Image 1: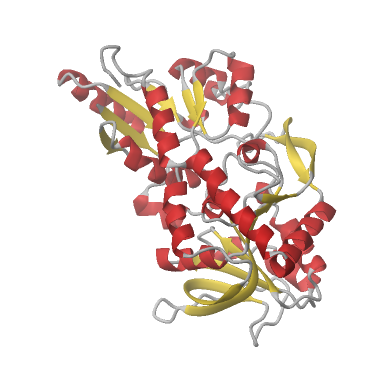
Image 2: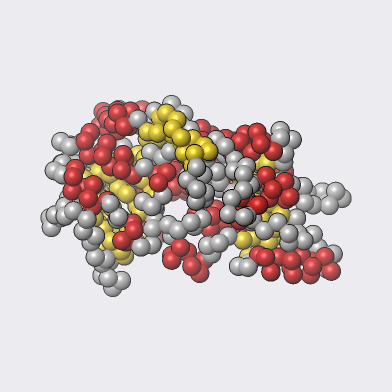
Length: 421
């Protein structure tokens, strides 16, 4: 079997695409590719409109079955390639785009989804939204990216602790550290990078909260995350909030961030913002040193960083909505309350209210911060239970074994009936 895969971002341009539209699909594809290689020959394409039909014709001439997995939202999925096609997409809103604009019929997702006849997404929430529009018998399945196995290895190598005894990271990029001796909170000023031959050395210790996100993604709600932290821990010097920023452009990554720090100062707690490259070894050290992972978003399609940290045994501070409903519980996380507010679809230039997002309760976030801090300081037994539960729950949610079983189910739609798979 020939399995053709596509994402707009690919290995050669991933560093330049970080933070741009649809960049996260590359990382999803990267997690799934080893599993797909169990089912057939995987061929990555960069121009699916032209390459997929040619590969499909060649496969047919040689008696091979062919499947095209497009790691794109439905409106960007090629639907006339001559090859059975399955869009592999994330979605976090309670309605599905069901109207066209800009003279593009595919903006009405009922057209591409109906044409290809099946789909894969990453949450039961999204499955319900799609079935609500396409019908209960529409073939769609939730398969989260299988990140658990990789971070379970880290969980066993570096057993989680409520407080970090000290690590050092080498960072090529821009670092803002409010505990640095030369730090001055200058309004709107973006720091200059470290050079490639002299990486920035960052030391972390104590109770560490960590969140990985793109500041240009409005869903991630970094502003409330930062403000609630600085207000709640203004007099606590032993707690650090680390933001690992995933935008490739420092000017965009830090846009508005420095001004917020300026307005919040002074405070004794520590903020560390990292924009730049971390080696696999240093990223593992950061995950291993983290006490709690934090999410404050208004909606999630799956949230790979949150899943990674929890697979490594890190309890979460997060709301429970959209994809997070699949793996957040009282036993593995501290609940942050939200309420619904009107929203638009992110790719709709009309900014028309057609859906809802989840508005964060900042007071609830502060309470969750404080509860997590108190657990780290005074209740190591509860922390250990939450850590074990986070690792176990993510195994059931996003392990390779779970993903492989589900992939076999959905791939069966494209295989000949005589094929035992």
